[in-house]
Image 1 (cartoon, rainbow, N blue to C red):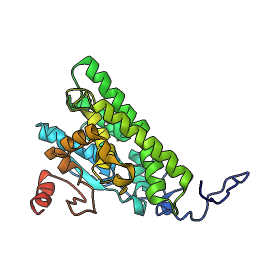
Image 2 (cartoon, rainbow, N blue to C red):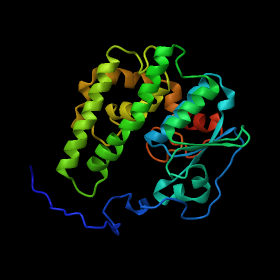
Image 3 (cartoon, one colour):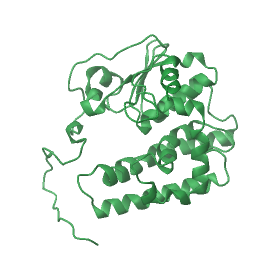
Image 4 (cartoon, one colour):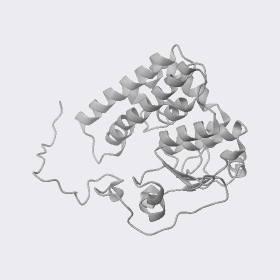
Length: 285
């Protein structure tokens, strides 16, 4: 064990002025809006407020998959939420998601309008509304739900645990990096063993379980998250690699993962209002 700075928690915790984390300015111990700003609304049936993090990509991939499957009523406006500037604390965003996290979505076709937040809830809502990407087989449907909820509970260990301490913490800390690396590798091993005998997470059919898991774990083993592929030895997870590449090749996945993105050299669509917004970017690559 390397030397570490001893820390004794105070009797009563107080928020530090700065902890050195790049996201420190938007972290606070209370909820609610910090400023008044109406949310933008377009002409499409679904209004999405998001950012192309893995959680945001789940929903844009799902919407693009629905459109690719011929579901015209899944058309959407996607509005960029700049979390580094605190857009998620605006009154308009908090009206949709009081938890101030992306993604959030409004279905304007219902009366009253349906306010949605939490990526897993949005995926399930869209799958049930349009009857797509939930297996028809009762056993595969249960498997789909099992893995969907597994992702919602497990990804925070990858993102808020491993990703934070490996990539975003102000200085390397051996204990938390070891702790969350061990858990991340356990999760990767779990997925790899499951995919050794299943084409997709729920069995033989592509589903919202795959759409939920791929932006986190698929992109991790493809080398797109945290610059940690070598550190985690991701090449040893051969079945997970096969699945990740298979989903990465889907046209709707390629389209969905660049929506609400303002970084990267493989496509950026800050705001999306129609298919041509993505077409124009991809045609220029």
